[in-house]
Image (spheres, helix red, strand yellow):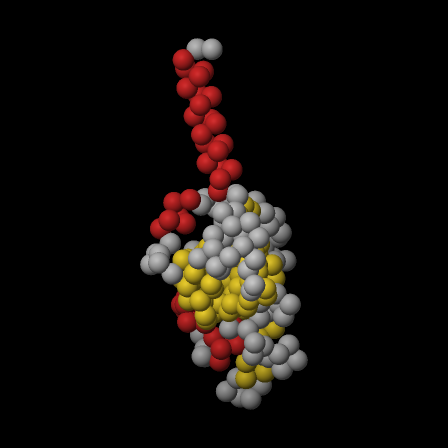
Length: 235
């Protein structure tokens, strides 16, 4: 075997080992389910918001000792395949559209992170560039976040609104309580939610410019995103 071939083979083996390591949990038995769901205040029968969706390309748990998510950025690369992706022990990268009004919770990923304490979750929203649907039939194509519903006009009539943003943005969402994984038997659920109703209540839809409304929706993500931790098994 020539020196060049030997060097190439060794490099390939190292890359393969690194790629495999990214997909293997450091704490087998620990499971954290990531979902996107409707906020607790949502009531489908009375809410003026009838549709809310988001397109996500990355989600990662942030240990309490890490102030930023630079480490996650260094390890992850978005995968440009619709509704597919790959997981590391602490995060997921891919391309997934989620229903922000799902009462049961729209699954994102099942992680097996190292046993430590986590204080935040990082979520990256991006325009849906992988959908093959016709934009005239699916207005979320090429958009990152969308909210639809009804509002009461100054004349007292009910009118519909539809606001969609195309911003690529990353949000760091503090967990409502620390996610403490201290052994190999912990199973938890982290539910992400966007309170579209609270955002809509803060908006004046009548006569607003579509561009201004879209910018307000992007800005509103920072204020109205939440992450709730539920320990399912803690032995």
